[in-house]
Length: 154
Image 1 (cartoon, rainbow, N blue to C red):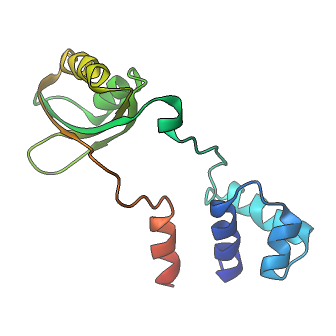
Image 2 (cartoon, one colour):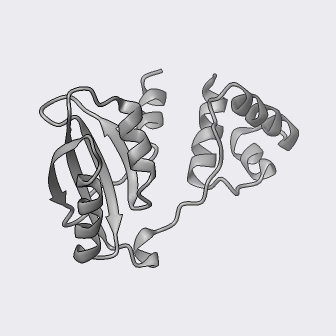
């Protein structure tokens, strides 16, 4: 991957609907050359796909929380992932170091909805305890942080 590939990825990250011709103008390549590079980046797994970013608040999901899960000793990451997928309110789930076994990011419509989700999570057979933190305000959100950091270090 070279600097042109990184610039193409940055442009697609900002607007994945941008045409190959428009990207080509910005990186001094023809549209077919940009398409070949994007196809190669997809084939090698650098680009895993394209998506639509929806503002959850516009759908009425205005409450956000992070929940630490404490699990029984023999709980595997696969079991946690399987359980997390059963709950549509789960934005992401991670295994973590520290006291908790996992961290779950939730989005709900309101506090009563959050309480219902917490009850469902606590009902998972391997969950022994939860600890919740409700997000008051989102200060920074940078979806491209990892890529920007990786690009800057090269």
